Length: 100
Image (cartoon, rainbow, N blue to C red; front, side):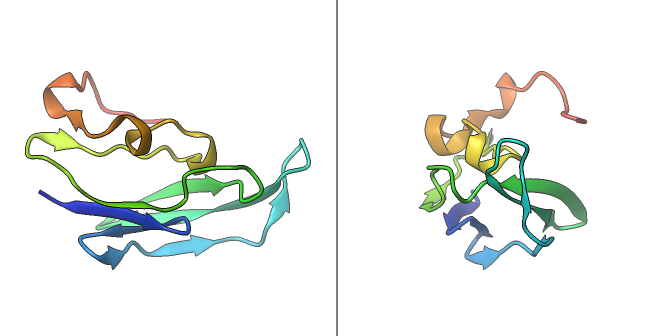
């Protein structure tokens, strides 16, 4: 029942941007500009990586997540094929919890 969207790499949940903290830009081994940081969803903080020079789906939505579904986003946002491309995933399709 949540609404999710992204505006220029920034995730909004129910219209509110998730707290995001980015480190100073660095250069990836292949020469791409690399932005690393953390995003927070409630009490959970997780690392993300953004490759701003790569073509990617940086703005989408808003999308209403159906009941009994999850919307998954990869941590390597600009190199992930996730719910932005294939939609919400039924909870019954989940087999386990991701740890790494």
